[in-house]
Length: 202
Image (tube, rainbow, N blue to C red; front, top):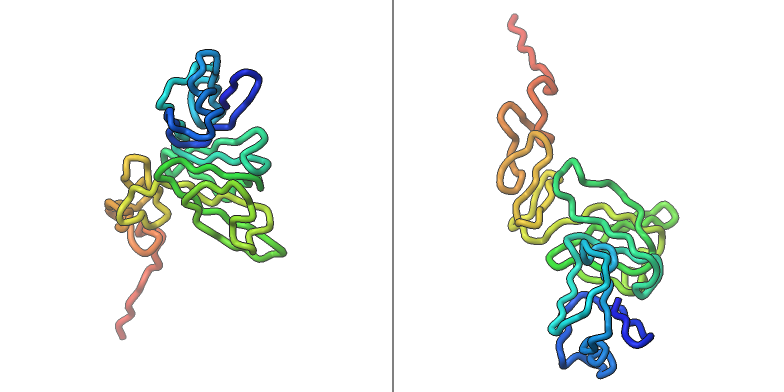
């Protein structure tokens, strides 16, 4: 939030320079009496600071959801998981606007009259109407991941900000494509979980 001479501006992620339009915004950014206050997810500091150009606004790795559109109300920040154990399942999110950090994507699901629709969001969503028409029900966030992993993580692995896959228990490999030693099958379960096969000879 940029405050200058009694006027407030909501600054979305991006870089602001001396050529920014409209000119009133450029003047506010250049004023020595202006202050910038970062909301949750944009900075670890909540203290107002004086802006200097060029000014880069970037969301920390994760997703910011607003209760109203476009980008109004008190936002909630959901950080990119740092491990498989810190992952979450079907977290309810606000039905307003969504801001995604750079190189991050999110899987979002909507339930409407018992039918579930899932979409992958790669960019900011200022208006709910920009989502597919059948996403009109309550929204749930299924996952947030970095887009830096190539190939993508398998076996419900999570792509970290560094571009490496964080694998669930018993999975291994660059893309979590293999079972760790002593584990087998599509779920990579241990031998104690496998059915016992007995051969009878008559």
